[in-house]
Length: 241
Image 1 (cartoon, rainbow, N blue to C red):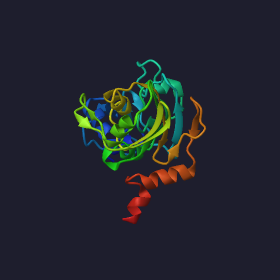
Image 2 (image 1 turned 90 degrees about the vertical axis):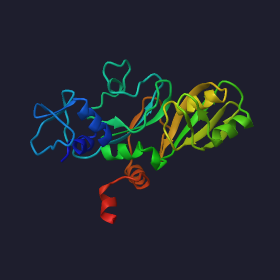
Image 3 (image 1 turned 135 degrees about the vertical axis):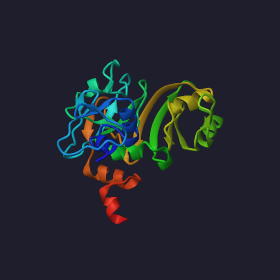
Image 4 (image 1 turned 90 degrees about the horizontal axis):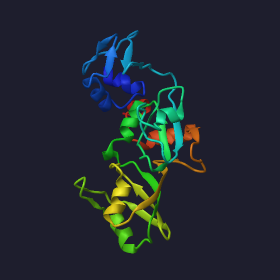
C-alpha cells in the first residue's frame, strides 16, 4: 500500500496532506524517512513525528460541539488545542475546521477518505451557520451576502448562497465552500462585524440540542446518509460501478 493511502486509512489526514507530510520529512517507515510513493507492507512500522500510525479496526465517526476558545489543531504547542481538549483515546481528525472564536458542530473521524472528500471544494457540500452581527440587518446586506461577496484580501468572489434572516441582528447562512474565515470576511466586506458564529449543520449531520463541549458518536443512519451524500470512493460505491 502506498504511504499516502496508508496514512489516509489510518485516519491521520487526507492523501494530499499525507504527501505533504512525507515531502516535509515527518514520516518514517521502519526507521527510515519515507519518500513519495513509498510502500508499506505487513509488519512495517510507520511513524508520523514519532507517533505510530496504526490501521484501525472499526472506523470512528464523532460529532463535537466545539466551544469558543478551542483551536482546531492537534499541534500540542498551541494553547487550547483540540487534542488536549478532547483527550480521546484514538487518533481522529476534523473534517472542516472552525476558527477559535467560532463554535458549533465539528465532525471528527479516522476515515481519511471521508475527510478528503468533505474537504474538496468542488463537491459543494453544505455547511449551515447561525450568525449574529453588531447592528441591524438590511435587505441590501442580505442580498449582497446571497449574491456573492468579493473578498479583496483573497482575490475571490464567494459563491452565491442561501441566507435567511432569523432576528433583528441574526441570520442563517448555508455555504458550499470553505474559504478561511469566510463568513467573517463576507460580513466585514459588507460593513458588519460578527459577534457570534455557530455551525449547526454539515451536510446531513445536525448539532441538534448538543451543548458546548458535548461529544457524541454519530448514529448509523447519520453515517450512512453522510456517505451517500458525499461523492467519495467508498467500498459500496466501487461495487456499484
